[in-house]
Length: 115
Length: 115
Image 1 (cartoon, one colour):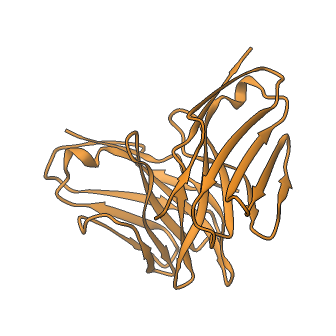
Image 2 (cartoon, one colour; image 1 turned 90 degrees about the horizontal axis):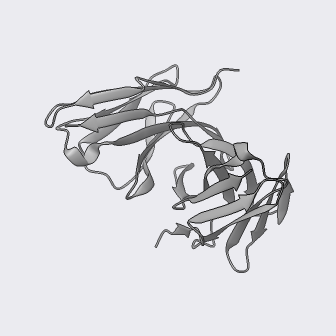
C-alpha cells in the first residue's frame, strides 16, 4: 500500500514569508502528526490531528499551525518565517485506537530552507 | 522532564557482527516504544516497536529489549550489514491528551558498518 506522501520535497523561502506543507497519510490512518527535525534539536513534536481536530500540540510558537481535512490529509503552515525555521518537516500517520496510537509511519519530509 | 536519550552517539561495527544500540527513557508512565532507522535524505523508517507489557520482541534480524525497572531500551541487530548503516532513534510514546500521544525521540546513534 502507498506510504505517507509529503509535498513538496524541497522549499526555499525568504524571511517573513509564509509556507504551507502537505501530508497525505496511509489509507485508513486517521491520525497525522507533524515533527520538526534539526541538527541541534533533533526530532521535535509540533502537533497531532485526528478527525479534523488538533488533539495534541508541542511547544512551538503560534506561527506554526495546521489543519486536517475530512479525507485525513493534513497541511501545516508556518507564517512570518525565520531563519531558525529551516529544518526537515516530517509527517507521520498512525492508527488511533482506544488504548493509544500505533504504527507511526513517516513520510520522507519536506526540506525547508529559509534565506 | 521529558527525556529519551541515547548512551552512544556513534557506533562502528564490522560487517557480520551483532550491533547493540541503547536508549534510556525518563517517563515510567510511557507504555509504547519504537525504534526508527533514518538514512540520509529520508524520513525515519519504522523498525520495530514494543509495548510496556512485553520485555522482548523479535523481528527480522532485530530484537528490542525493554527493561522497565531501569527504564532502558535496546535494539539488537544480528549479522549487521553495510545497508544497516544509518542513524537509529528510539522514541517514547507519551503525554496522552484526549487519546492522543506524541513521540519523544532520543538524539540518535549513528551506526557505521565497515565491510
